[in-house]
Length: 341
Image (cartoon, rainbow, N blue to C red; front, side):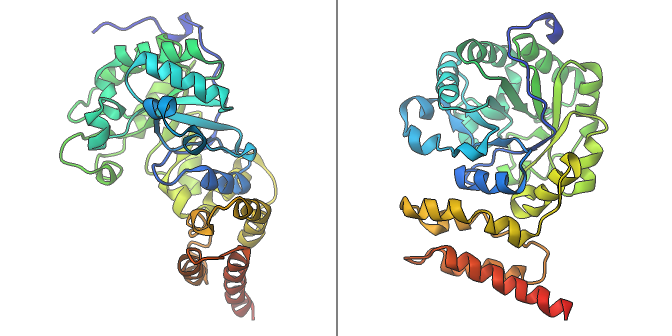
């Protein structure tokens, strides 16, 4: 097997930012409203957009697809695609729109992605990924990073994974987010692909050990503060996905534990979002588009179910405004008051 020169031998890319805590790109979830909420509760986390195909960036509704509030920074645009010229053009557009990083998706296993020859199936084409990354680096002035799996289907050789990373690193990529599972392209749904293939964090750790010049961020199956913190002993950072979305207060606890500061209550954090919510309502945004991202804030807390129910039942109604969120908070606080009494 031919391995290209190690990454330290080539330096065309902008140095990768140091990322300890990040929130994974999640389709239909990490839109701009979600990211503003996550920024309010985790000031130091790096945030990612949903994956956007390069063609959509070039030809689609950019104000909608690339919507971003200034408070979100630092925020990365994740691109899908497999044509270097188009990815380069989309990367340039993303940088011009103010994104702090452009990330190439080499890990999504959905049928739609496979049909378009991008996502996880790109791990079988490391030279194409390297060509794409080089084109993206040449087209924009922000770091270009890659999010990948360990391999696809029945490929379980670490040296194949390492060869993929080496080829892409030789093209200038300095930062890899490693979802520490294989992607099974046949027989599993995207949801099953996040749960069924076994986790092998040791591969990500070994990658960092053997390629210390690269930034390695571990992703996949991280569910609590203790699990996330263990990864910092072996890699540069941890990326949370569904856990951060379903239990967003975990993000706040991680931010405080890793970067310092005072832990704030859920209600206090949410009330800090009021100016943003009201400004969006004034622009014609319906409350339901924001409230859906807030439902997990009181996860595991007394009153959490009532909080979710009030928002779920009321946010879609005409005229729903901040008062609905305030009522949900007050109901939840009443449960805490009863416990204290």
